[in-house]
Image (cartoon, rainbow, N blue to C red; front, side, top):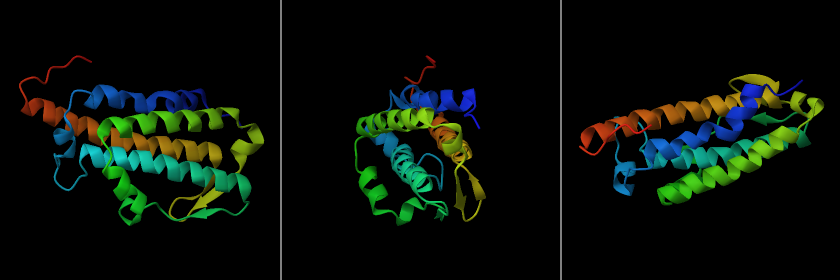
Length: 165
């Protein structure tokens, strides 16, 4: 089993769009509940930072155990998520970039046998470390899309919101 080239690229770069999406927003704008019932941009970022840590712990567990089983991660039940929400947005973005580099390097070094190791998610079933990477990236993309939508609404609300990207 090999990691698809698209997965390798996304592991290294998918998150980088966040700088473009929110780079011109203030801390106050990042705290607004722009879409009813959705987390603020800061909460979304805190979740992405924390989820990276959870994801990497899970991959390590799969590497060390043949019968690894995981419940869905629930941010609201994680005290570390609440701590992350208190961090400034630039610090969250920096943490995201730094830890992602470690995750990408780890994944890119895995051999075929390691990529084939499986862990079971109680809702999604049993799948390989390679597919766990896709699950991670799709989950992240969902949150990046929410951030995109919120940032567009915030830019639309201000006269300085011009499209530069």
